[in-house]
Amino acid sequence: MQNTKNTSKNNEIIENNEKSKLLLAPMQGLCDDVMRNLLTQIGGFDECVSEFVRITHTVHSKSTWLRHVPELANHNLTPAGVPCVVQILGSDAEMMSVNALEAVRLGANKIDINFGCPAPTVNKHKGGAVLLQEPELVYHIVKTLRFRLPENVDLTAKMRLGYENTDLALANAQAIADGGASLLTVHARTKVQGYEPPAHWAWVKKIQQHIDIPVVANGDVFTLADYQAIVQESGCQQIMLGRGAVIRPDLARQIKQFQQNVPVQAATFNDEIIVWIQQFVDLCCAKESNNKYPVARLKQWLAMMKPAYPEAVVLFERIRTIKEIEQIKPILHDFRA
Ligand SMILES: Cc1cc2nc3c(=O)[nH]c(=O)nc-3n(C[C@H](O)[C@H](O)[C@H](O)COP(=O)(O)O)c2cc1C
Image (cartoon, rainbow, N blue to C red; front, side):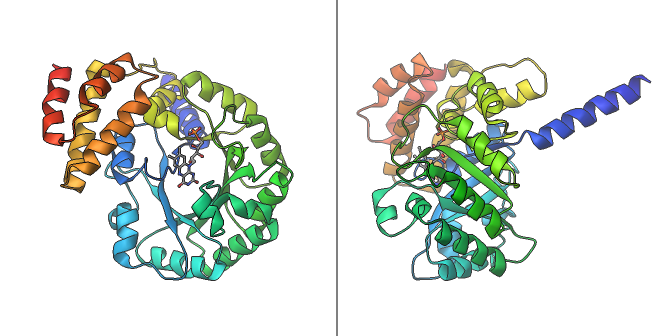
């Protein structure tokens, strides 16, 4: 009897976990393979997404694909074993298909299309959020890719609520679903709203009620309480974490603990986080031997963590003017001691 109860409880948890997926957002220049590696090791994430690979007039070489998505050489998994989706951005459906097929040839089994990037250079070349002004083109892109990709390759998309306003939000979501995408992530803001709070979670619910593919809610989840609120307001079981996952590197782990009904234990800076920072620096140094990359990435990360951890403010001040990573490493070591 006891066993039966435990088994059914486990099944319930497994079922809930299946439904309550946590995804790590694509973030150009922030969530590269090193950050994806570290954050998925810390735990809590079911899936992550690569930085976008921009598709123009050429077919990218193998080395380009592997530079953007090294996970391709590891069965699409981060070193921690978390699946990584390849994100592409463009507007030429044919070229996007040819390139996506090349990614598939290199091992990709999930392709995500970016309909949300707000960057002016990207939008000027008709990529990202600007496409949300043309739902017919959104449909054409998704439909063409779905038609050209093998059936066993998943095709998903990520959109904002619109370009200037939300007038076409439902039309775009419908276009993506009708085109044959299996899942849609919605960053609950328009392009014009940029990253200005709040994210409009109620809109995600409207979209989910309008289309019959699963919708992932995204935007402004910085704490466990935000997670509880977005689930409540959006009605979605699948949530994507962006900046919040970088600011609090154990946010996904906290959420998973909450989902599994075990005590939520937030990491402390001097205990776990400083160790992760050292690991991050080591991974950056292993990726690029010059000073620029590890120093820039460390300062970028610490600056983001400042609002969450007073220790990050102190550490950032200590390294702010230093340009040599070998001079920074002992400071990190002493900070930990
Ligand atoms: C630095 C940065 C880069 C981003 N790059 C991408 C990208 O390449 N593709 C994409 O779909 N979204 C991109 N986004 C948007 C995020 O995936 C996410 O939708 C957004 O940050 C909202 O989630 P958040 O409030 O949890 O950060 C980026 C966001 C940031 C802050």
